[in-house]
Image (cartoon, rainbow, N blue to C red; front, top):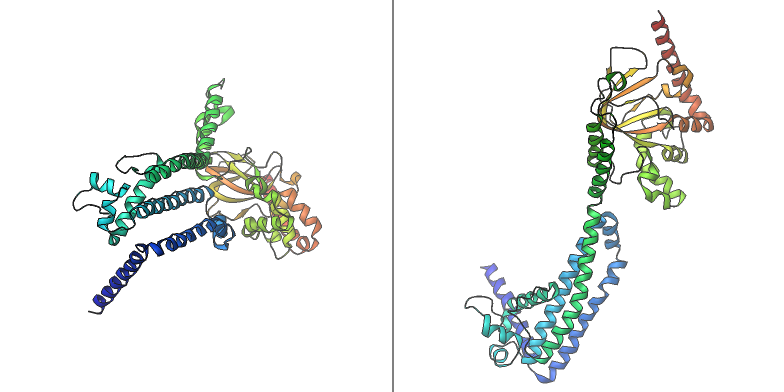
Amino acid sequence: MLGQVNTNNQAFENGKCHGQFQEHYENPSLRFVLVLEGFKLLRLLRIKKIMQTSELMTKFWERINVEIALTIKFCYMIVLISHWIACVWGLIALQQAGSYAHSSLLDDLNWISNWYNNSYVEGGLNPIGWENAIPRYWLCLFWAIQSITSIGYGNISPVTTIEFAFANFLMLLCGIFWAYIIGSLVEVVQGLGSTSQEYISRMNDANQMVKDFTVKELPESVAGSMHKKSSKRVRRFITNQRDVATKNWSESNAYTLAESYPTLSILSPELRQFCALHLTYSLLETIPYLSSKYLSPEEQAEIAMQCVTLEFATAEKFTAHPDLGRGILIFKRGFATVSRNVPSKFLRWQKDIKDKPIDVDEVLVEDEYLEERQLVFHFVGFTKVFFVPRSAIMSILEKNERAWKDCARWRYFKAGFVLYSMKDSHTA
């Protein structure tokens, strides 16, 4: 009962508002005042400036994907401009007829009466009458979208001088606006497909390289039993890079933080330092002598900027980087078996190695002591690792005596003892 009363009250208030507007507009002395009030809608033009200075919109643009944000922006522009055109188109008919009432609108020559006489279907959309504001708005919006998109069904057309003048002006304006929207959306779509385009380009280059192979399959004595069908491995590696590697492919397999995230190169030194820590802090904390317990944030950031990300194909082996030398591997994706660089029939599985450092102690030992017992990683599937070069580690430890004396040197002695014991057992 109470809900029915509230509904009736709301309907009464809505009818009262429509009645007041109708009474005021149909009064010639007040009509000009209402038209002037309508010019207040021009304040909506300030919405762009308001959105540019809005903290909420700034956060939205910063956090959302740029291509998606631009698509939303263009859709919003189309809806907003279509709404404005629809409102003006409806007001033109109102201005000519003097009222939305049945008798006034149909007796006067305007686009609504023309549409009603030629296209109206009993029981369908009815734009006549003050109470039919919503159906009338949908009809105006339908014509506005037709004009913007250049579809033009022809069932709604201008008939008076002012309507033709507005339609001509609108067609010229909408031609420019629609060309701008289409061009912008094409640019957005091209941005969304940049990864696919890069993949196609790289795969075409790879196919050309494979086509130019002078030998399709290398002898087993050269390639080993696990390295047959190099062409298939090359293509699969590129596909894995696209699917599970970085979003922005680097020109090199080994890429630093600055290469992976070009934004770092344009930031201030302090902000670059904090961003580098955000990207690597949890990884560096797994290495005892590089953790915040011994190193300052500046030292950790210095280490972080020298680390690189490496990617490996299935069955690939790794002992040291050709340019960076030995280092600590922290697995981000994939698995590996581990052996020593001595003849052996056994491989040891490394389990649960994701985000855990490998070779933390032995990396401190000098290269000449690891010639016979160096770790060899055999990667199973496409693998991505975070690589901390030994040169960067030793450079920091030379500057930070506390990290060396309290932690690193004891791990150095432990690794040296283990390697020496292994050498003795092998000799025996």
